Image 1 (cartoon, rainbow, N blue to C red):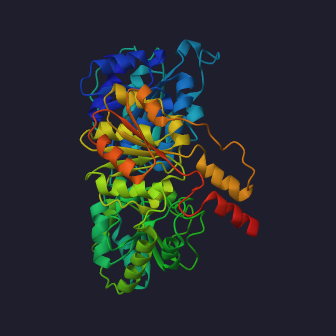
Image 2: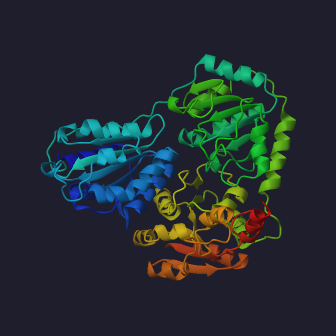
Image 3: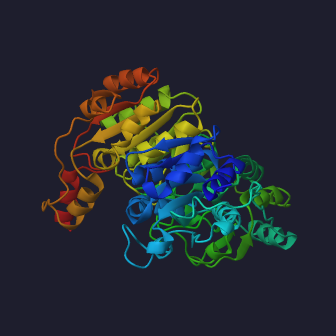
Amino acid sequence: MTAAKAIVHCLKSEEISHVFCVPGESYLPLMDAIFDEPSIQLISARHEGGASFMAEGYAKATGKPGVVLATRGVGGANLAIGVHTAKQDSTPMVVFLGQVHNDFRGREGFQEVDLEQFFRPIAKWTVEIKDAKRIPELVQRAFRVAQTGRPGPVVVSLPEDVFLAKIDEVIFPKTIVPKPAPSQQDILRVQDVLQNAKRPVVIAGGGVKLSKAERELLLFAEKFTIPVSVSFRRHDVFPNDHPLYVGHLGLGTSKGIIETVKQADAIIAIGTRLSEVTTQDYRLLSAGQTLIHIDIDANELGKVYPPAAAIIADCKEALSKLLEIDIQPFWHDWATSRRKIYEQASTLPTEKRNVNESVIASLQEHLPQGAIITNDAGNFAGWLHSFFQFTEKHTYIGPTSGAMGYGMPAAIGAKLAYPDRVAVSLSGDGGFMMTVQELETAARYHVPIISIVFNNSMYGTIRMHQELRFPKRVIGTDLGTVSFAELAKCFNANGIRTATEGEFTNALIQALKETKPTVIEVMTDPNQISVTSTIEQLRKRVDSI
């Protein structure tokens, strides 16, 4: 078989249903090989960055590796943002890049870049396959590396002459992901810590989702009455309406929710790397607290905070073993009091103070069970993070990398993975414009996503920081007037502009019935710069200092 067909055989063995790309001449034989494989659909995007976000969203939704194709240095550079997002979000991804012909390497050939070196800092592994005979070895290794340990992106570079080379036919085994379990000694260490604790709390992260351990986390929390907080943009690892859920540790998190972790004397961090955002600029935990850190990657243990117990394990295996410990919890009042703090911070007022709150209330009421929500980076997401209640697992997909332009392409990937589920993206006008061209991709492939665009004609997050540091000196953050509802129609999608709760609700109900993509443009008050502040309030705060 040709090398290109061998790669497709590997995709099939890994049960990959969709591959995302922008076509390129350097890897045309691979596209042609996909043409002959009916189980794999090639999605041709409008920009490699959008294609990589689609693949990343597909991977988060399915747990399978997202696969994206691009050509040489130009295509590779364009999709680098998706690789970086996959690295920071621990998302399995395999990138195949066509490379300059072997005969032309080292001569600054057309679009030549050393792709291994280019991607090495932001990928889990990079490799260039110069000999077609090594494709069976290295391609299966790429999928194994992407999925095992702490998952992440792998970049495979293939000179264009390699694709047509003939190799012996090969059978690729599907990757079986190892599930390391904690030792009995590890479990006894946790038991000792909890026996001496008075105010324990769990911080649950993406590792819980990757190991499909949501049920085990729920059983563990309930058995020992331990309150659960979730790391940045991992809302759906624990039902938000549960009496033991105590909040999301992200950007703009209320002081009461942060205090829950600060007041805890024992912290069980499960499947989280304790990132900058989750730990509030690495200031959340203190020396007086006892940390139990459980993660599948040994490199994450002790990287930020020294743990009293460091456990290398798959989250599902670890939580299953932790259910066997023998302690009697006596901190029920602690859990109850912290839940009340969360409820006070996260309950929307009956009378909505702005249209952003109205949008969240409407989504909460009208989205069907199993709906998937994705979002871009931006202050608009503060309303989602603060008030929306995620009650089901695998219903939220967001970039911990803070990548703008992520939300709508990620929704396309999620919707392709689960055609029977509603997929809704939330974006600001700045971020949405960065990948707006992928709306045409959604329309062309009949992917009926719903894209909500909060339009305040500015880069709102940066404007907020600008007003805090350089009040009234506005430069670079104002944007022009764009009708996203009308723009959507140019891309063969539906477009509806709204300004009130009633208008938005009507638009949402209509969009849920559509068979093609819909953009709901929400005209927001530019002065309402965040969940808690207006621009006027920020200026007054700075003036008073």
